[in-house]
Each structure stands twice: as structure tokens, then as C-alpha cells.
Amino acid sequence: MATTETMTINMGPQHPSTHGVLRLVLELDGEVVVKAVPHIGFLHRGIEKLSEHRTYHQVLPLTDRLDYLAPMHNNLAYVLAVEKLLGITDLIPERAQVVRVMLAELTRIKSHLVWLACHALDIGAMTVFIYCFRERERIMDIYEKVSGARMTSNYFRVGGLSADLPDGLEKEIRTFAEEMPRHIDTYEGLLTGNKIWQKRIQGVGVISAEDAIDLGVSGPSLRGCGVNWDLRRDNPYSGYENYDFEVSVQEGGDTWARYLVRLKEMRESCKIVRQALDRLQPGPILADAPKICLPPKKDVVNTIEGLIHHFKIISEGFKPEAGEIYQSVENPKGEVGFYIVSDGSARPYRMKIRPASFINLQALPKMCEGSLIADVVAVIGTLDIVLGEIDR
Amino acid sequence: MSVESVVENLKGKFSASVLEVAEFRGETTVVVKKEDVVAICTYLKKEEGFNFLSDLCGVDYLGKSPRFMVVYHLYNIKTHERLRLKVPVEEKSPQVDTVSGVWATANWHERECWDLMGISFNNHPDLRRILMPEDWQGHPLRKDYPLQGPGREPYQGRLS
Image (cartoon, rainbow over all chains, first blue to last red; front, side, top):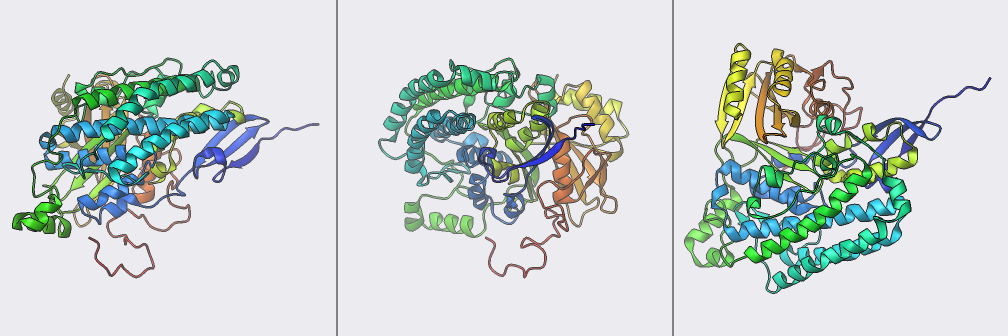
């Protein structure tokens, strides 16, 4: 008599469509996934532990290495958290706020481009990958011009920015923000009406709004379930309340809905970048808080106060009063937050990062159990995970 | 409904469990007894609309008693309000009841808290290590765990 039994197979950690070092143990009944168990931690670097041994300024470069596709958002969440802890949120100059918003939105486009490129490539659409990376390269150039680095920007500072924008960059960003919607039209032309694309992602990886909220899913993945929630609008930071943009929401809860949400988000981000450019006025880029912000180099070499402040901040750091705060931002992946406990010393007593990808990944078994094994690849792509952030 | 009224309701309902209420930088923290944490979380979710658990983590206050705090960051998606719950945990029995029955998202958060901080969660459906290897000894985020890792010379240079 014929008997049937399930088969357990290993997907990853070197599988090309697991976007890094994710390992999934899949229990299969024929081609149907019965159970999916994610195994993570291959990229664990102990960033939370390391940050307890560094001054507040020294923690900033570590945050670049979390979600390395959106480093500026991690920087932003961290500096906002420290500014809140210090109580200097209101001192941040207007120009610094506007530049932060502008770069954060460019980063959102950059991150979504990698998502779209890899998602499409996983499913078999090679051309989109090439086009997306072409546009992403232009944002990388902008990154390089503002911060000197393509990936690990480390550009924002507690109190403002590390340097002003270089000359002529505003024009380049404006050109990009004006051209980008046309490129999004191209991607849509290649994918949205494409029957293969539709068949591969419509009705795949469905999750209901209740389940998604229960599992803590945030960001575009939650808005694809019809939940109208965006931290930029609902708990504004960095002056997001002054910008006119629409929160992109879709009903359905499937991979298709999340695809539409992210495409519209890119268009809205272009809108915000253009508004930020209109608002950009010359002015200071660092808060008037000499005990916290590093002084400009010319003050360090010309004035005794500048030299002392520089020396004190570098050798000792600054000491926020004892207390605890939580600050989160709307990262391209979801809510990224920093919980910082200060004991009054120059180093964080405890720093907990709320990683959006880590929590979104928890919904993966729910989304792919009962579906075909080929759909697991689509679900990993649609969750838009970054292992650097998951493993920290 | 503001956070203040939520705290008032909480004090009325669980007067014996609310140990302390603190305000810092516009954020409200409520310290509650660990025996009632599941009841309080269920109440906050069902009656006060805190349907989203943003974050859950442990903090090690080495040298103080109680040594650990488990911190819950609650969020209300309708009113966009945040509330922080803290639960003191003694060193000699580092365990709390799981809230994964209240918010499913707590499952991985609690696994992480167990893995890195060594606080175990009673009735948890799947309490395994999550970031560290399965056979790892010790809990790295504890304050008495060396930064360089076990079995290695402490770092001799300056840390900052």
C-alpha cells in the first residue's frame, strides 16, 4: 500500500533569493509547504552590546550597518532618539531638518528600487533588475557626494548634519526627482500589465489586517493589508507635518497589493523630495549646543572654546540626564525604533533597536504555509527583508 | 482618550499592581508587578485599544534589586499613542509570563530576550535561542558578560 510522508528541505542560507543569509527549513507535502521555520542570526554582530561601550557619537556609524539598504533612515532614527533624550529636538535648525527629510526620502526610493529589482529578478523578470539598479546608482552618487560613502553614509549628526550639501547638488537632486516618475512608469509598463507577473503575485502570500497587526507587521507590508498607518503622518518627526503627501494604502493583503503600495510610495517620495528642495534655505546645519555638537574645524583651530569643546566631545562625549526614551521612524521596511536607557553617563546604558525586518519576517510562516514552494520566493521578496537589520 | 486617562483607568482596575508611573520627555512609563502582566496587557489591548506591540526587551540593572526589567512598548494604531510598561524581574527567578497569547508578535521578541538577556518566559510556545547558536553558553547582553566574549583576554586598549 502506498504511504505518503512529508519531506523536510533546507532553503538557504546561501540560496540566492533569500536576500542574504536567511535559512528556512521547509516541510513539504509534495509541492505544498506544510510548515516553514526561519532560522536567523548568521549575521549577528552584537551591535546593541557594542553600543553600550561607545559614546553617543561613536554609536552612529554602527547604525549604518543595520539596514544597509537604507542607512540614512537608521541614522535618522538614532539621532532623533538621542536628541529626544537630550531634550534638544526643538533646537535642530530648519535646514538640517529639510536636508534630513530629503535624503530620507531619496533613501526610501533607493531601498524600494533594490526591493523591486530583486523581487522581479527572483520571479524571473531580469530587465527590471537592470533598470532599477541604473536609477539606484544615481542615488548612490548623491550619497557619495554628500557623505563620501556609497553605502555607509554616517552623515547625520546628533544636533544636525556632519557637513552642508556640496555646491550644485540641489540641481542634481531636482533633476533626479523630476525624472524618476518617468522611470517608475517604465517599471510599471514592464510589470503591472504583464500577465506572468500578475499570475505569479496576485493572491500569493495573503495575510489579513488583523493577523498582520497581531504579528507586529509594519510599513508597506501592513499598508498592503489596508491599514492606513504611516509614522511620517501619524507621529511626525523632522517636520514631516509640513509636507503634502499621500499615504499609500491598498486592500488585499497579497503580494500584488504590497507591490502597488511600494510603487506609489516611490512616487510620493519624489513629491516630498521636490517639496523639500523648494523649502531649502541657506542657514546653519548644526544646533546651537556647543557641549553636544562638534564645532566647525575653523573654530577648533582658531578659538580656545572651539578647541576645548572639540577635545571634550571627542575624549569624553556628552552626558544626557538619566532617563529612557523610545523614538521610531518610518523606514522603507517599517517602523524602526531606538529605545535608549541613559544612566547619566556618556554611553548608552542600554540600547534596543526595534528592527522592522526582524518582526516582518515573523509573518513569513503565516504567509506561505499552505501555498506552493515556488511562492516562498515571492513571499521573501515581498517582505523586503534585510538580514543586517534582522540579525543586528 | 489620552494616555493620562489610560493610566488612571489602569490604576483603578489594577490598583495593587501598578507600582510606579513616570513621565520623561513626554513619554509615559508604568511599572507593574510581573504576576499581573498578562492580565494588564490583555486589558490594555481589549479595552484601551493598544493593539500593536512595537517592542519588547529586557534591561539588566546589574547591582540593583530587582536586577532586570522587561520593557513593553505598546502602540495604539487608531489614536497613535504610545505607552511603556515595565515589569521588574528578580535575579534568582528570571521568569515572566509570556504575552505571546495577547500579541503574537511577542513570540520572537521573547525568544530574543531569552537568548540575549536570559529572562525566560513561562508558557511560551517555542522558547529557543534565536540570534545566537543553539549550543551557546551564557546570555551576551547581560552586564556581567564580557564584551570580548567568553574565554578571551579582555580588550586592553581604550574603548572610546
